[in-house]
Length: 361
Image 1 (tube, rainbow, N blue to C red):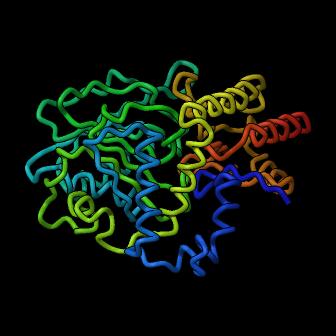
Image 2: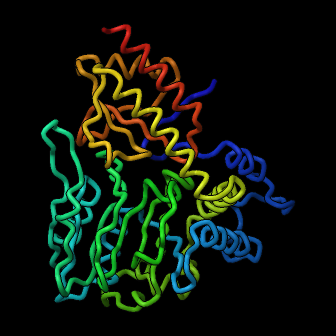
């Protein structure tokens, strides 16, 4: 039975990656044991970890003066790790809020670790559509850093422009759009992302951090969140999520073999255009995000008659389309079409949307 999974995460993993992991699960490289049984400090596993890191450096073109850290704790863990690592006790930071997750990051900092300046950066236009007001992304002189979420998974909003922050480091959460489009890593002080949407199973978080930001952590920052400690120990200060790290390496290899991030961006644009063009062609569904700021990977939409929501989801599930229910914060529907989702999966979804709309019009 083929199931199409539109969940926001954990989400689809490329079929070739899953098949290779399945093949190696009980016997990795003829060692007679599975990757999940191996010591993370064994020479065999250290080679797996090093290859994964190098592959990520290659496909993202990460400069040599950036460290790559493979961590645990998820995005929420990094909401704390960012101020604990680079916000001085008497300092302050700018938070450019564009949706649910950047607001969570702001609250974590403001309520627990120090002064955070809130910049509300989303407005509504005359048609009731949400859009990003980049003019609100003005850094405050003296800020320790500026923070943004480049893709708001809940809200279906994606930043395609970057604020000018000058010498103030720009820290970004790219959990849901990492490796979906080409970016210039050198424009950021740090990039954080959870692996469970575009890379690997849940439980792995990656931080790409510029070296000059290391060594600033507060004395009471837990060692496992201290970027300088993790960098000094090659992310092996404690036992990492070795299986997710291995799976990430398989995914990075899959991306490289496809033609890299540029090829994925091309595919993601094609998928997003197909879905949004259909939604815009009918008044049965509505996407409340301005076209310029619509996420390529998290499409949020509502039904004209929301009393049909339960029926819509139940029928979708009966046809093996799962994960379409919107986040509890906003409701409605959401289709997540990350890197592992092929064009066929979006075509199947559009056919279902069309059929359901015609049956209830």
